[in-house]
Image 1: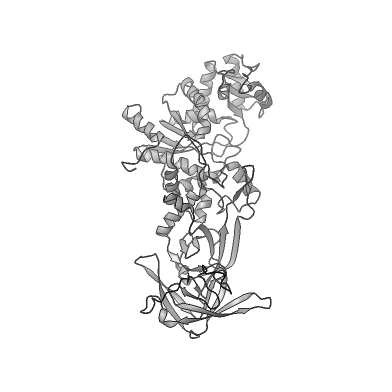
Image 2: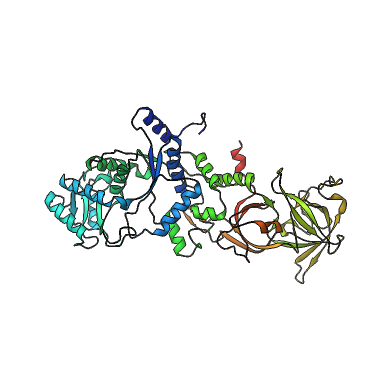
Length: 548
């Protein structure tokens, strides 16, 4: 961080804690539950937790919150690690909530011995009824008065597997009249007779998140436990468990506003439903707001980190315009993506006064003003974009090609449209032009001016490709909610790209001149099939707001 750059409120807290001697080192953690793929909201938390450790010379652990065996899967663990590494971060230790199951069980027995936990036989429905409301206190369970001895016996029998799922839970004994509903005797252990991906069938009881999380932080020596604002009301419970379980290390929880993006839903449950229902091709569908999805689409880790830095860290909940993310991606690609010519919807163009059978190699820059170049073949037969031609000029602001009009072909010559060829239905199938051989780009007479410049691809050397164009996966409804957008994907099967693209590999990014930024798909591209994903458009009006 630059010296004159202001710090966010969490950085200020950490800096003050170090200066005051409250802590002598910084330990953070990123604790995802392995029940789905990470999304852009997680990127903010990743950048914050790992960034704090980097900034203050501390360490950040990757901790998998695997305390619910029913929803977790090793596939998600692999995906999470891949995403964090892709963003450019390294964890100090890879740990799991299940690493601490014995420790948590000991803490639960300690609470029972102290008379601060009891086994409850109420059904989930009854527990909700007894809990009360925001304006009415809760009622004590009829089983709350069990003695520590009775509770210890029942809890150990729960652990031994004597009782069925849902028949008993262990609850903390706090205050059923507390104005904070989280302190109204929360459940801390439940029976789940399901195999765990790491511990197998050793356990049939599992800790609840609110109980496990503070104990995991304390066990690891976490100094600053950073989470999103929905856990602010849980902080008193967090502190209660740390104190009453007599943890040697005392972590502290700090909350920040989660990332909300326009045109985007970031709920693992909802995203999983899209995958399960076949609305998208998978968690890594390029339209998905998952990190694997945006990676496959062609977003860069540098752009995402830049975006997270720009939106900052605050307590106030707000919605960020998704176009800011696209702006960050575009800025990075503009500086780093090489230029090529690609025609997405080809229209045949023939230069009738160019020699038949002749092909010349023209020079094209890899980057504007760059030192490297590549060659582009040019001949009598080309392709241009359908959208770059109209038979009749519509107005004086139209600078593309029309019958009788002139344009420059990028890196080549000025051409003039003489006439068109149509099929039996009156559709234009070919544009017939002539060229001025004295106007070759870079030549002595290349300075003759025309207002329009078009990209193109030579017909015989063109590389065929499928191109996927994307709109937002979600569309906002009148009531403010989001639904899947049925028009989020357009597939073009007959795009043509200049032959220089043959040197590229999966995942490579390019600017298709005058079109936008595109990435070679890593999954569907094969030796005989080239597939491109649209990353972002070439320009966006949002840039104007950034430059004010």
